[in-house]
Image (cartoon, rainbow over all chains, first blue to last red; front, top):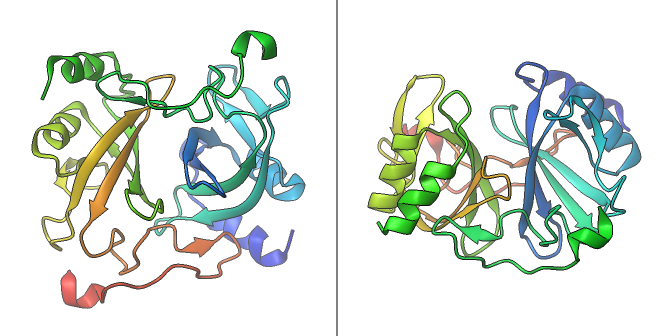
Length: 125
Length: 125
């Protein structure tokens, strides 16, 4: 990790220790999921190039794919104008969503399913 | 707005009255910005098909483009698996970012600018 990357991490605005992270498939452009990172998760992500998050429900660091094998290999991390959100461009192994869909955003607001199932959640978790 | 859309709004999880909203360019797939909506902003967005948000800094409803003319015409609203985040697919007039860039995510975490300026912020605001 370069010094410049370290210094931009230090300028990021973590709110109650967390920053929103949007995850996008590097190849298809599909938005895969939305999660939160704490500073440690972001540093681990940059160091290992595998996405780490903070699970607010489990109150613990979360290496995405640790149970499922569905790791996210991080190709790029972008920062927004206000420095209070990050965008991860990733290569997604398997599917991003724990329900078996490729993306967590698999439904329209009217409930219609538009996403594709890429694995059987019962086989994985 | 259909009844089914209304009912899915009611199942969304607003945290302290707000839900994260990711905004993606419908055509290019670029992630343009990240903001928050309260229930009123989401209802107005669905009714008018123009994106509305809640400005946490100004503590007010915010019709994106009201000052700049850079409206976001909303083509689709998607909901994530946990029903605690939304994804807007939009047609963006001008640029999404108040700095003049097309997307708010115009920099890598090492500070390198990768986005494109599409307007002069001083002319608009």
